[in-house]
Length: 344
Ligand SMILES: *Cc1c(COP(=O)(O)O)cnc(C)c1O
Image (cartoon, rainbow, N blue to C red; front, side):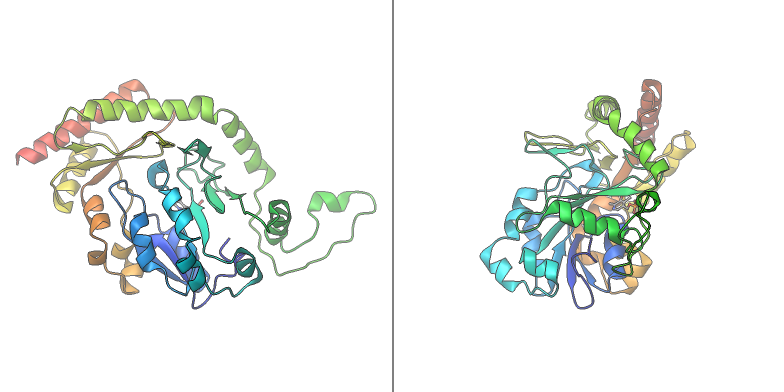
């Protein structure tokens, strides 16, 4: 979608410092520069800090709904139409001229099914991208989806057709259309890519989609509630926010933080949890702490909230087949491990 918008060398794209590397890597692939912004207490990009990162080179903001909890889209969507911000924007492609402002491209890899002011994720910004990778809430093993929600003068149906061509070698007809009687002639209108979803993957996705809201999402919420209810009893536990009066999460991963600890103690607690037969994780190592980005000049000291959140974070397992007994096993292992280590 960055290529569709004509993002390239010399351009900047604003992303959170706390996300999976895919959010930043795609910017690098286009030859542009990821400009990182710190997060807030909810793990999402701090919308109040975006404005200071905008320059005349900014083409796109990629907010990430971390763990499935929607970002502050009211603030982000209103920022890009502020007259002072709009007048900074320098269009250098047809789609940039047509939009006339910074594009808001949501990385909703975690948030399919999440809600914000009564609207679903996918419908909250200009464009949204979902991931259907094997670890996500809804999977087709690999793959994803792009949701177009562009306003006038864009015709979303037309843009959809352009993307279908781009995703299939730049060819004007797919293989099935070409087999129709008298329909063999095709054209290549651009040096396209090959990133179409296969029919086999799509058939998995259709089944997953059908059971998603009424079954999968409900089970995930039960697991979140169970973790939250039990852990709330402990003063050391900082429970992640996953719903308020106008937002609900897609319950992707449960980002527990332990209060007042550092990275070393967090790592020890994780080891204790592992030794009790429970596998936990950390989502994510902030980008400035990873070799490629560190060596490119990003410094974690400039992102203190990300650094702090990371150093105290332990992600608890959340998946459909996790039984209530296993949820209890996870909770017992986490509680015992924290208490053992905090006493040292
Ligand atoms: C998984 C993930 C992606 C990338 O998804 P792929 O389908 O592997 O390309 C992007 N952003 C975030 C935040 C993710 O967790």
